[in-house]
Amino acid sequence: MTDGAAGTPDGERAEQGIAARIRDQLALERRIDVADAGSGDPREANRQRWDERHRERDIESSEPNPILVAEASKLSPGAALDVACGVGTNAVWLASRGWQVTAVDWSRVALEKAQAKADSAGLAVDWVEADLLDWSPPSDAFDLVAIAYLHLPPEERRTVYAAAARAVAPGGRLLVVGHDRINLTEGVGGPQDPGRLFTAEELGSELTHADPALLVERAEVVRHLPSPERGPIDAVLVVRRRDAALV
Image 1 (cartoon, one colour):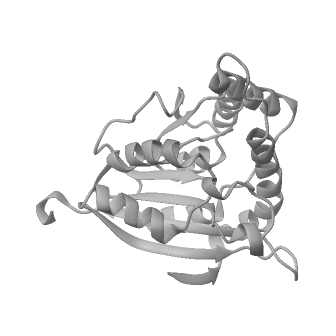
Image 2 (cartoon, helix red, strand yellow):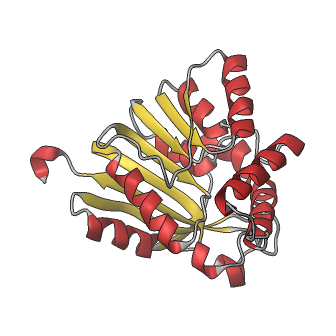
């Protein structure tokens, strides 16, 4: 595992805004961690809270994730899946670069904003409203599957991430960006529940152990430095599915 600073020429503007977006987004996640779970359907209550937050204000950056920009720019456009897409900034950016994009989220309000963003840009994205614990993408269907800042409890994470990995086509890649566990002590923002955090190495090991056709290409700690003191610390994982002839 390497430890480096994020940012590429293509992603400079996105990098400038990433710290503010992470602080906003993950302040909300902290609120979810302590939210009342006493309702008859906690997951539905959680979904409704996300609807309200998206309705109240824009809680995501207007720029795509810089790590996604850097990784996707290395690839030839094909079919892409954006898991937990929010208001669709990453999905719309991928579509603008020639990708055929499917994007899934459980917030109807977020998807309405995402659709408006795609319409404004004159781009087509297949938006899917679904709970990721109930919905699974088709297997071997996507050249790129992206998951950005989806911090779930461990059991839910294993289910959702395994389904995302199965969706990667031979020769395709799964990109995961999330807060590294050391963000709790050395970084800023993010969930304060260590169970929702992970390292790229342990996540990569978990996925490749479950599916030997997967190969880790990148497992890194990436430190964002919006100020001289400290910034968010991400775990970045890129996993490739071996070509069928090589498995």
